Amino acid sequence: MKVLIAGAGLGGLTLALMLHRRGVEAVVFEQAAEIREVGVGINILPHAIKELAALGLLPALNTVGVRTLELHYVSRLGQKVWSELRGTEAGFDFPQFSIHRGRLQKLVHDAVVAELGPGAVRTGLRLQGFQQNEGGVVAHFTDAKYGLASETVRGDVLVGADGIHSVVRRHFFPNQGRPSWQGQMLWRGATEWPKFLSGRSMYIAGGMSAKIALYPIAPGSSEEKRLTNWAIVSRIADGDITPAPTDSWSRVGRMEDVIPYARRFNVPGVDIEALVRATPVSWEYPMCDRDPLPNWSFGRVTLLGDAAHPMYPVGSNGAAQAILDARSLADWLRKAEHPMQALHEYECDRLPKTAEIVRLNRKGGPERVIDEVEKLAPAGFEYVDRVLSHSEREAIVKGYAGKAGFTQAQVNK
Image (cartoon, rainbow, N blue to C red):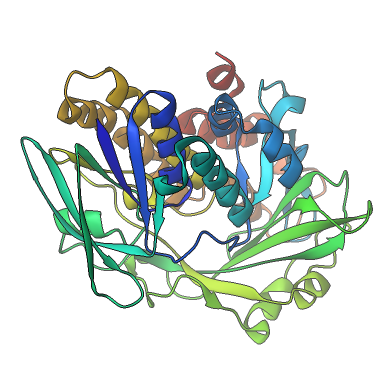
């Protein structure tokens, strides 16, 4: 069996490596000219690290990322709402990593090339279209730089792992329009900064109108510094779901736009405004998703990751779900009697789970715990238990973890 994968993001590359381990041939096609370390920080939770560890990537992860020790939810005034240990310190068999997205992608890419050979990742090729029949699928690629006809490739399965603007998804859903937007703008950046708390700690602070996520993603130039990621999201329009205002998801941000929001947060031990001002470059883009689909799989073609279920970046879960997609699809392609049966079973497994997470993330995910406290005590509080009980706060945070598949019991089983 030969699987063609459109998109060399984390999901597509992980799928290629997993398929190879199961004796299935895979080739990845990427429109970018090269795999570069672009982007900023993300968190990979234990249920996804479990899959990467099974691929032998844990030692490499330890060299480029930070094992997250703890997470603190605090109000915009800096008052603690919820705290918990993370990863192995919380009893999981696997750690949580805070890591630079580009470095993680490069790490998996290098593993694919080392195991499958340099021809396993074909760059500079844009998917233009495909046809399928009972015997297989034929994909047509053009040179991404010049747009000239390039080559036609035949395989048994085509996987669209080509992101929120997926060509494969658009083929089956041509009238989907732009991604959905609820009026929230996201600014992100990373710079070297003095460590706070343990040096492996994560803050999520704010309330209903604006939030910030803050965490180290790599060692710094000295023991007292870390490459520190920040992400600020604020509502700049009403909350009705509308088409996104722009098709640019990696536009360079302007300091004068983000600083007024940075000033809203009082995070213990961190001068947020100074951190943002010290960041050489930041990016801004509308926080978008798409409505869950009725189907992902069509004969010999299916979707994976953001192509299948783009979701708001809350709950530290988007990249993890792409990795879980890859595991499920690789398993089904190995054991099913026919490729189309495998794609059907994969869809039945993963579509309902990810659709639920898309909906939960629109409501705020686990970060909703600080929203609920702010609703009840907008001017702050003396004792958070008098505002919202421990059990009520736990239900918000742990309830999300259960539905997203990363409770300790789910991961360690």
